[in-house]
Length: 355
Image (tube, rainbow, N blue to C red):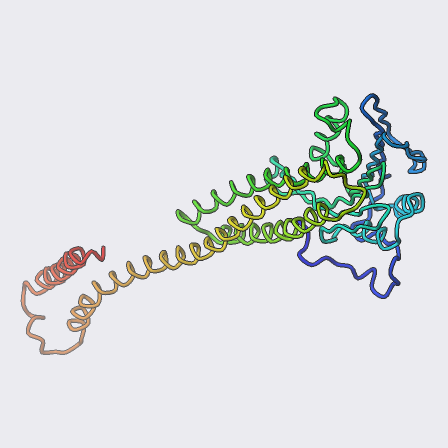
């Protein structure tokens, strides 16, 4: 789970546009793949260098270049040189803690998304930043790790020519990638929702300090998800209303559909956040109720033993002339009185429903 505030001290004091990867260092080589397609043909291959993808195929063919691994600055720098990207765009690509956004730079569009997925095996949310460059006949996607199940359906649709994706341009491919990312949010919400329901039941029955820790962990996840979804609404709206020649009119209705999905995700996120906030109150109330039950039991026992302690204290005094000390039945009589007092108080407490 990423930190709420990312550490960017390595870039402090450097001039704008300085290319430094912000994140954990990695040794493996980035994985580069390219898909070139149109309505009648498809070429898919894995690349050794980014230069093998150039020159890009001319329209109407669409070229999709995917880069898994942005830790090698040289790969991103070469990509920027070949596509004529602005240095600040390259700087943002190398920083995996960017806020979701969309920038229209004339010849191309630059989008930043947060790709969230749910790991059923670990019961955890996985986070990945995706940067997208949309040009006249190409789409470039860059991320830290392989896309996995999130982008695989898009690749399968292209391979199997499902729907109209092979007949559309790069703007439709960008929409398909955006829609695939947003659709995954619903799976994450389902996983988080199940955890919230289980935690709510645990809070009511037997809350523990570990329950409180789980509650805080879920709240942090929801905060991060909210940070990922709220700006995405602005991204989709700006993409639809950009007026860019790179976004065709036929893609507008699809973007509006994605916008509706983002609003649904936002509503679900806010609902879960409200539930988690209420669950903290439930936890505090449960702990308080348990403490009150314990204190009630201790108070009842103390109330019963107070008069018994008084009787025992009176006859524990070492006076020589106490009439009852010489009486033969004094000891059993004292026990009868003490038991009668205890039983009377128990009956009284029971009638008052304190027990």
